[in-house]
Image 1 (tube, rainbow, N blue to C red):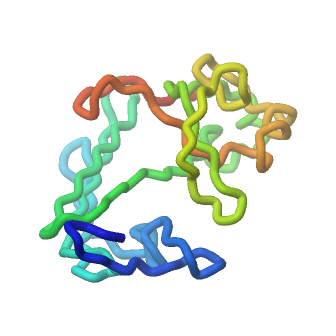
Image 2: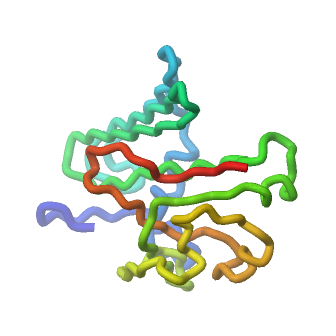
Image 3: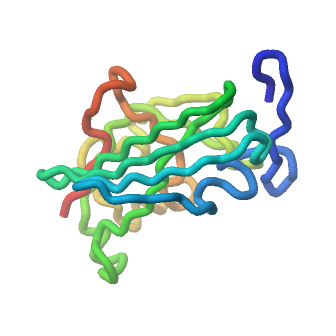
Length: 184
C-alpha cells in the first residue's frame, strides 16, 4: 500500500499469502474493546498502535450502538488516526432475526428489505471484491422490496447464501436513512 509516496506492507492474511483483508491476522473482531453504557447508548472504543498489521499511525476507533424509542438500532462508527491511513470499518453484525433458539424455520417466516440498488461481486480465488459494481435489478440481490428468505431463494444465490457487498443508497454520508428492515 502506498500513501504519500511511502510504501507500507500490510500483513497478507489470505490462504495464498498474497492479499490483506478484514484488518489482517488479528482484526478488530479479535481484540478487546473498552466499553461503557451511556443512557441508551453503548460506546465501544479501541486504539490500534502504529504499525499494527502494517498500518501507519495510531488509530482510535469508536462505535456507538443506540436503540431508538421506535425500536431502531443505530450504529455510528468513527475512526481517527495520527497519520494518513486507509480505513474501511464495517459492522458485520450477525443477528438472529427470529430470536434466541427459535431455529431456521422461524427465521424463514421473516421478510427482509435492503435499501441497496447495486452489489459488488467477489473474486472466487480470494473472496475479495472486484472493481465491478452491478445493479441489483432482476437479480437475486434485489432485496429492495420485502423478500422472504426461503430455501429456494437461498439455493439460487451464488454460494448458497448472501455473503456479498450490497451498496446502500445514501444521498450523502451525513444523512441518516433506512438501510435494512426485517419483520415477521
